[in-house]
Length: 250
Length: 194
Image (cartoon, rainbow over all chains, first blue to last red; front, side, top):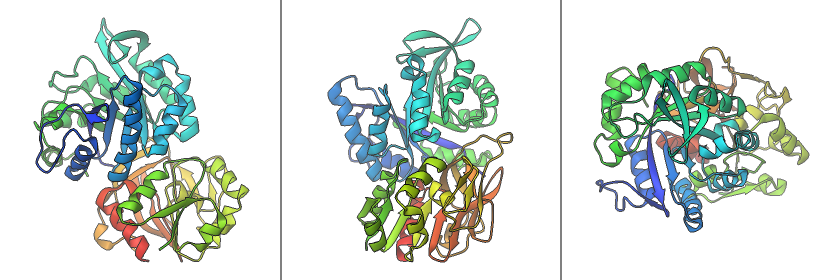
């Protein structure tokens, strides 16, 4: 049976991991390759590396980093942040990325989804959507949740699926950072409306939240950052817990 | 040992190269017939689309070259599918090493693509060590080869399908051993030992 996926997300600035505490057996938590390899050893199913660098220099470091990650990691990984053109995606593919995640650039230029999927395959394109529940509606935001758009979560997700997205990574801005659990109702609705996999993001705080997001939220994968980086929950203990709760896990 | 990875117009080929490097093997990523013919092992990797990839191979006559190879050959993902006789993807005639069709998953049951980690069942043949029966490996695909006489491992998604195949010196996996953690590394090692 297909297993539910657990995906730690690492924020990268100027080629270094932004968050993270000192784990045992990790020499430099600032080194995204070391930290990624630690998560892979722990049983993470995939990794997401998000480049939050704003400078040109930082972008170049990121492409070099993607090559190093691909050389060292034996599980799939997605890279995102600042992918505005097909050429950006091409560069990351050549460096060895398995998937790219696009967010604001897809909203500004929806044809980018068609072009990247057409050029490199649907499986290569993850469309990340940040949305906030406000006034009885899930409004899509861009620029890291700073700018609201006229798009609505479900219709936008269906549109990018039509355009060739291989997966949707949905972050609920209402839940992100709260550690009170994922946006399970919205995720369930999303999963029922789409034919492609959905990755849940935002709100993970306890192991129970992952059971909820896979059962009630019908998510195919769950992503989290701080609970893993600050070692509040380790990947092996989370997977043990999920197995005990009859969730199919690798 | 000379390992050739067949280069074509799509997909993350780099990751196969990197996986072999982790096993201490320097491979050549090439579409040059001479280099491929001289290799001790040939890997036909890929993610991509059937019609355009077959057109690329035919243009360079790599389809007939592949079929005639006598060294161990490993097709991965789209590679396995193109080693069959026909694909529903774009109604494409393929290389025909395995006399089997490639079908699209029904879309009204579960999500397609089949993406993520799934377990290997009914493992036999030379490519996959028996102790990996039940192990999880990484898949990303919308098309599949039905279970057939060449099947040497099965997985199940919507229906049972060929996770790995073998005929003579031709081996293939629908999953990505280069992305399948430790079990994937064991399978690549085994391929280099065949």
